[in-house]
Length: 352
Figure 1 (cartoon, helix red, strand yellow):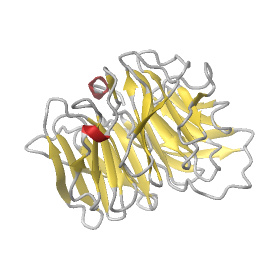
Figure 2 (spheres, one colour):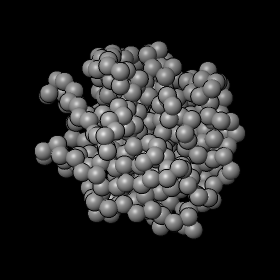
Figure 3 (tube, helix red, strand yellow):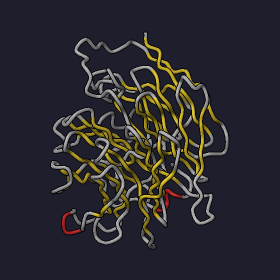
Figure 4 (tube, rainbow, N blue to C red):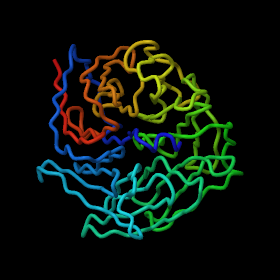
C-alpha cells in the first residue's frame, strides 16, 4: 500500500520454531535490555537471520549484516542507474545469498553473495502500480514475494532456482481482490511459510489471508475478524509456529492506541481466526513473532509505540519498552535484533 511507503514501517523471520519444548514453564516476569548498535538516519523494516547472522535492508539503498563475533554492523549500498536512494522493505536469507527487494517502482531484487559480497540484479519490473511488500524463502531454492495488486489480484512472484529467475503467478490462479484492498510494506511479515503452506496478509478495505496449502498451486481466502475498512487498517504482520498455530497483529496506523480487533490467533491453520486480548495489550503494531524454544507460548509484538511480550499466546501482555521499532528477529528464546527508524538494537530477554 503506497501510503505506508512514505514513513512507516516483521517475520521475520524466526529460526528454531519447531523446537522441543515439552518442559516449558511460563516465567512470572520478563524484562528486556536494549543495546543500540546503530543510530544513524536509516529506516529499517526488513530483518532476517540465518546461522547466527542477522541481515537487514533499509532506505537510502542500504543493506547490512550483524554477527556477535564481529561486534559491529557491516553495511553496503546499492546504486541503480545513478539512484542511491532505493527503499528496501523485503529481505530473505539462504545459505549462500541474501536477497533484498525494493518497495515502489521500479521493483528490484538484488542477490548478495555471502562468499564475496558481490551484488547481482536478478529481477527488475517497472510500472505505475508496482509495489512489493514482503519476501520469504522456504529453502535455498524456493522463494516467494508478494506485492500490491496490479490487476484484480495481489502480485505474487516465485522462484524455484535459488533466486536466479522469478515468475509471476497469473491472476486466474489467485483470489480476486476486494476494491481498496492492499498490503503494508511494514516489517517484511506479510508472508508466513510452514511446509507447503503459504499465508499472505492483507489490509485496507479488507483484512484477509490468502492461503495456499500446496506451495502456491491453489489458493483460497481465509476471513479474519481484524479491523478493516480504513485507509491504514488491517493486518500488518503474521507468524506461524507450525502448520496449525498462527498469530497476526495490526490495527489502524492513524489510531495507534486503538486496541480493538487488532490481534488474532488460529489453531487450525487459519480456517478460523479469533481475536485475542481484544481491547487490551498492544494497540497498533507492525510485527509479531513467536519466541523460539517456548513451544509456541511466548510472543513478542513490536511497533513504533513500543515492545510487548506475552507468555500465554496473546491472552495477556506486558509492555517491555516504550522504544519503538518496526521489525524483530530472534536466534533463540533470549537474544535477537530489533530495527526501526534511526536505530538497530540488539536485545536480550530476562526471565524470573
